[in-house]
Image (cartoon, rainbow over the protein chains, first blue to last red):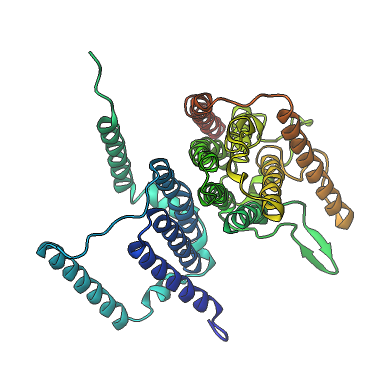
Length: 173
Length: 267
């Protein structure tokens, strides 16, 4: 990356957008707007993947998360016509405070670790255009990582059957 | 304001990876006639078309009007259902070409069988072509599948509350989508800019290849308009039945058939 590091700037901008909109998603009161913020965050994440020479992951990210799952979220939210949520002030249980404190600690730890090994994610990711090809990835997925791959698909199938059982109407008399 | 812009954006950017001609020699350089020859060409197309639904859903929701909202909800369910069939039908082509790169898809379809039958994907994968094209109708909201705007029930569906340029942008998006869907169908199943017995030489050859591509694309655009004035609109349950119980199994049959053909060739 000699000279003007345009790809570094694009990457940093995309990460900033992703983090910003993830925050908006958590904080926003209106569920539909939260989902839309999540869409923007996922799209920014896809840009990050492209900048790390992983266009396949980026495309899958946009197709699966951006194009299918979040559209489904929107569909359900609009079908139920959910309005702005109402929040009760105070009356926080100690468990909640404890959990959020633990999450904050974990986040701080991760941030410290990342700062210490600064920029190593990008350094490992920039393997150039050779890493952007799909065929080697597919070969790995269907040889060395075949077992986890198949186990995941069985897990998804089980989740599908479980959802069907839960959503099924009880048979009438 | 965001919704029509999103619709047009998704429609326009899809064309970036579609090769529309052979390589053009120009002043000592050769210019490939394609926006960006990326290694994930077809996946890119599916990714962007899956984003096009946001334009319609957002328009339906932001209008704060029950007819518009109904249109938006219908659209999201319809596009999710038909995307599966479309992607599975496209996977057959990818199997045959062995690459997501659309220039490779076209190269795999050049040449002929027995000297006069073009090696287009439509001949071994006719089922795949039908499924893909029907799903393309659903993805572009053209008539037998235009439930999101169904004028008879929903006034005008998702664009009821839009007027002037914003309305025009929705219509531009719809017609651009028609052209892009035709161009992708031509690229995947009808050999793109190739034609049996035609090998592009020099500038004239490159220009001729653009003409071939345009004529093929315009034929499918014509079919889009033809079907619009021929078929009535589906009912909602018919739409869902067709998508999940007919097109998706047919697309899977096509996938297995193509895989079987490739395995038979390697024996």
